[in-house]
Structures are given as C-alpha cells and as structure tokens.
Length: 156
Image (cartoon, rainbow, N blue to C red; front, side):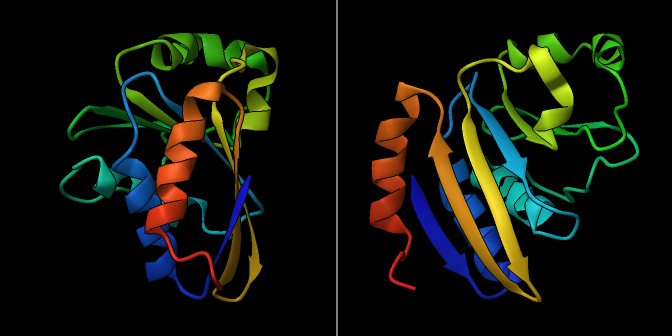
C-alpha cells in the first residue's frame, strides 16, 4: 500500500493522471470514499493520463460513461445500483473483461460480481485535503505501484 496526501483538486487530479499513464487494457480501478471525497477528480486525472480529450463527467445518473483515449475507458458510478441484477442489464461483466480500462466508483455495490484482481483506491478527507490509499489487489499492480512511488511526491 502507498499513501498520498493532496491538498487540492489539482493535486488529486495529478495523482490520477500519473496513475493513468501506467494502466493497460483489462485493468480495473476501484475508487472508494464518501460523497465528495474526490473520486471523480481522481477519475478525471486517470482519464487524462490515458489520453482522453474533452470533458470527463461523473456518471452518477448514466451509470457508465465511455471514453476513448490511448485505450477505451469505462467510467462507472454504481452509487444508484440497488441490486446485482441491475448490473447484468448494464453488461457489467462485458466492461470488466473487455479490452479497456475500467474505473468503478462505489465498487461495493457490485457484490459477488467484483473480480479478484483490481487496484483498490480509498479516498478520505475534509475540505480540500485528501488522503489517497492505493492498495493493489493483484500482483500485476506491484510494479505499477513502484513506478508511481518514484514519480509522485509522497513526502507530504
């Protein structure tokens, strides 16, 4: 696990951007935290790091937004999901096992459908200060974590 502290949205975005530069098709990123914790800011940075141009918006009402950058990016917000059956209607597993990078906000709503291998990111904070904890849930993310440690200032 690595822990990164940020003091504004721009820094949170930058952490996401550095992470996005290191992702590959098939990678699943789970963003967890309370409402307003910075999940969407981090997701916007990840998309920027993956080369997505244009506006990246929260998929709170649409559930899934798809973008094209270096790879296809599927940005999901499962906050409004009430039952796992709704995920089948969305084609949830097709997104997870497709050829893009998948970012999931509120991944706990996916229940038993959540795969074993993903990068778990927890965001906490008050005001503009954030603590970002990045925990790899798969060996394939260990190298990514080492690279991220080198390129993001963790001294704060």
